Image (cartoon, rainbow, N blue to C red):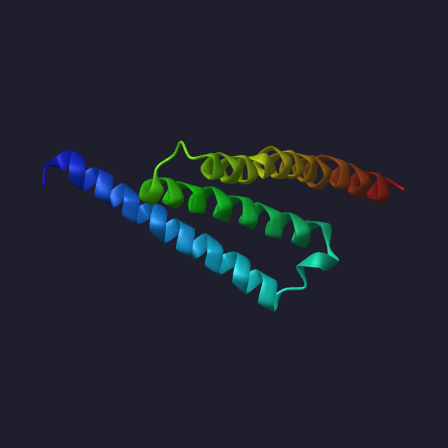
Length: 110
């Protein structure tokens, strides 16, 4: 086995390990957390789901290849959620870091 094959194998192992952990997170979070009760909880679940789907997609591609119509549908489903969760993450960051801090400063001045 040459160096390129070893690097590819190690990369594949990292992808599989990441997918297992991402799916384990989603399942565990579903079971032990009341994630539906808060905006942050729903965001964390959505973000975890999107990461798990993308990693699962990558594993599917490793074993089955691409080009089949069903793969394109799975790919669309996996990546359709990513812009949504990234937008929400930016929105939440601005809310917490800028707007909430501004409110706190205004309340301490009064």
